[in-house]
Image 1: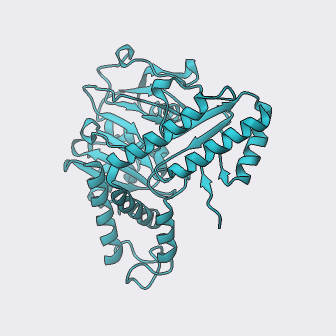
Image 2: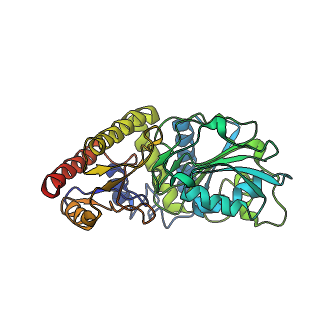
Image 3: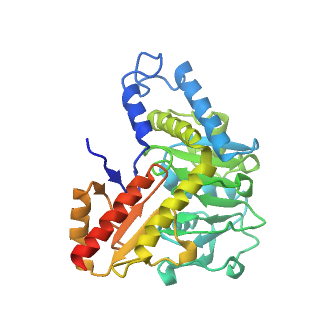
Length: 359
């Protein structure tokens, strides 16, 4: 099989080392005499794996002891509901930053539970810029502030962490594990797994202890963080295989040198691709330079009529899933942790060749 570089926004490519290990262990996991997909989540083999994966994640992110780590289902979209259910705690208002497609969805769900104060709104600039934090209109009576550090579709990423006197909630689905962060600044961090963590079907939630145990009345028991925390994320059968894959990815990240090492790698990858875009009149990126994403790089061709040909020729060079989201158009290269520098170099080389042939 030839080397293929998959630029999908998610489900995204996994580290080659991990996929090979998945293949080796698919039929029999350790000494279990069965696949990890077939063994009980209550059995000793799975429980040991689950405990190690949580500890590895705690080590990677330096998660303080007063935070629970939950391995849930429902995707980040389920957290759009679980956040207000668990964090309103008797209040009727919450603050949300509107900076893209996913924050918009979180807002819509939050409005089902409370009065949402949109404290900043990037829709007017088509999600290409973020207002300075000093200009945000934050309601001090809000129960929390929710924001999306990296908007996958628009490729818009915060270069700062909002500082507020209330729990800060972050949807980190497309940026988690790409660099070091200070977990203690957040009340809740959540992330769908299918970008930087694992395969689809798993959601990681990191929640501070004092935000557990006081939910909106008459909600599903599975949507109570206390239910999940008190049962080690196993109140019901968890997503066992995605959990196993996450554990293997955490091990791989440790082998790479941890998140400080990944940050250097990711910054270099992004700079390489943006330099190729900025150095050409044939390609362009619409996002304000200060807020360009390390993980999701949208770019437009000067001649949109060439989009189809670009994708066709890219696929011939084993560069796949580069089509941009329909709301943005053009191309999008998602370059998560598993994308090696060689993949970026291959894409840049192709872009230069394509420009010479079609400019």
